[in-house]
Length: 96
Image 1 (spheres, rainbow, N blue to C red):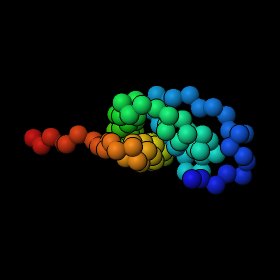
Image 2 (image 1 turned 60 degrees about the vertical axis):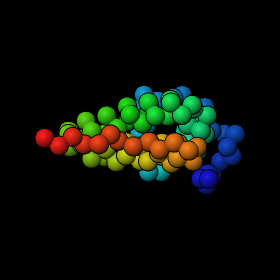
Image 3 (image 1 turned 135 degrees about the vertical axis):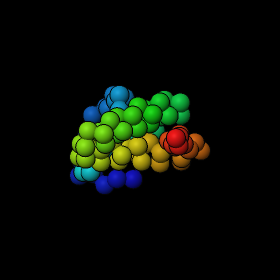
Image 4 (image 1 turned 30 degrees about the vertical axis):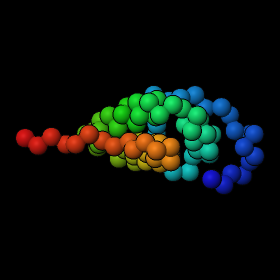
């Protein structure tokens, strides 16, 4: 899926994070995605919700670099869950 300059066996195991923030060229990304693929769908959804809340806080604080990493994490979670038949979406915005 992702090109790596080192064999996959060189990647360290990745613990489940509280929120998922991925740098653009994160060398641990293949290991992170492998760990995510092993999570239950409900755990992916919970991680998505926590990451979305952190992204909302980063946006409110005008912390754009952090926001970009969090959004990249949310999109990764959406892609992995979608491949397994589950859509992860933000709840509708309330008007009023």
